[in-house]
Image (cartoon, rainbow, N blue to C red; front, side, top):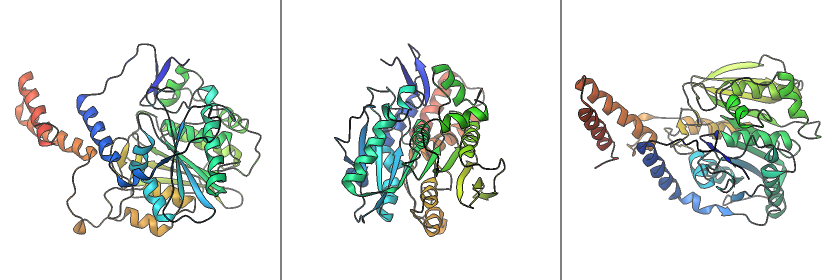
Amino acid sequence: MRTCELISGIPLCGAAIITTSTVQAQLAAKETAVLDKSPQNHRLVEVAGFGSNPGSLRAWLYLPSIMAPGTPLVVALHGCTQTARGYATGSGWSQLAERRGFAVLYPEQQRSNNANLCFNWFEPGDIRRDAGEALSIRQMTSHLVQSQGIDPNRIFVTGLSAGGAMANVMLATYPDIFAGGAIISGLPYGVAGTIPEAFERMQGRNPPAISRLQSVLKSASNHRGPWPSVSIWHGTHDQTVRPRNADQIIKQWSGVHALATEPTRSELIHGHTRKVWLDAEGRQVVETYFVKGMGHGVPLSTNSDVPIGRAGPHMLETGISSTVRIARSWGLTTEADVEEAEACDNSLRREEPDLPSSTIERTLRYARSRSNTAGTASDGKIAKVINDALRAAGLMR
């Protein structure tokens, strides 16, 4: 029986407790309510009977209205405290799938496995080929290939945080199944097998040697190529899973792809750094995006005129759409889709209700402006400033 749990991606054991502030809890609840009312989420269908399911996961499927034979499949893995439904709307994968005619599978963690709904990316029994949660996800994809006519050569996997680490697990243990993957704020494969190691790796401390990173990946299966392409996304200001983990993932996958240490090319996109590695045949096999100023979450372009996804907890407005760009790297969308998803003509935009992320910013701005005039206020005056800020943000009456 597991006695440990993950909170915000951090494994905790025994009586250790982390509490969330009242404001954050209210915002998260509000965002969940908004996501659950999204029409597209009502089209998620639970898939049952897909196999022995040793990892005890649930499976939710989104099928586009128009679905051709040999449809591609994207497997999207949510982060800690998230659900399949919330991740579908926040990330925009179902929205994009409807436009471009591919299917999306959302594996979902259960509280009986992990109290905070994190995929168990560091549990040895869940990250081996043909075992635990990894096998459950593999069984889901096999079932859909048979039941829905999915193209077995166009199956991709992506995820955030613990889901990003689990996406890397799937790429490592089933490289023969996945044509490509995208790891957002995730970790290298096989770098933690204990709680202390998980703490260290998330903070970027004491990583394994490059040779160890590469050997553990090669030994995860009997596969010897071709290997899936990998897209790695990380915020430069991520304090939950430090950016150093992205560098480690690059080094891990550069071994099987026989890549040079330095990237083939580097560029700035909307102020964010993108690096690309090409293999000996000139194919793009590894790319990284370091999203400037972003913390822990999925980078989105929700202020665009045709946004994909919705801002909220761990769904962050950055002016760049990871969802559409990842799909583009897999050949599921076009460059025109990317341009449309990130284009923003402020002169044509309507005033829209604030989402929780902008609500926090508005609250803080108000509180700062009031506290600057309050000077060295008493506790009572400080409390009044906070309450006034919450009322200004619409969180209190």
